[in-house]
Amino acid sequence: MTSKPRRVNLIVVHCSDSPFGDAALIDHWHHARGWRGIGYHFVILNGYPDEESYIQRRPKFYLDGVVENGRPLDRIGAHVRGHNRNSVGVCLIGKRQFTQQQFKSLVRIIEQLKADHPELSVAGHYELLKPGDTPKTCPNIDMDWLRGLMV
Ligand SMILES: [Zn+2]
Image (cartoon, rainbow, N blue to C red):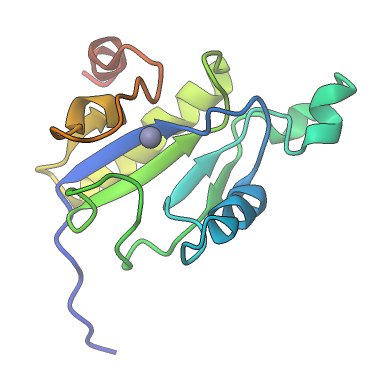
């Protein structure tokens, strides 16, 4: 196997804009939109993997902060128009509230990727919008604050 690794210099943070979910559910949602399955490379769980656990207010704490794999890293994702080729997409489950465990996992993923890709920069989806894109606030996190956690 000598496939050339793709050049990655950007990690893009997203949120699921749903209070629950996991990689399998997002894969299902993305297939339902006619896409080729999950467009993110990583999903960071919040303890509510499905609607039932959320509606019944029964968090599965053992899933809080767990990182699931989506699309393989060596494949181009489908998560941000115009920036997919050179980026890795990470999705935190949640709308506006995220857990400390999720942020810990996010920082860990970014630091691991930085070890392999020293030129990696970190952006939120909303920072990469182009003219004509639907306005978004995804991932509903102050990205300057997040980047401040990394130094
Ligand atoms: Zn997004």
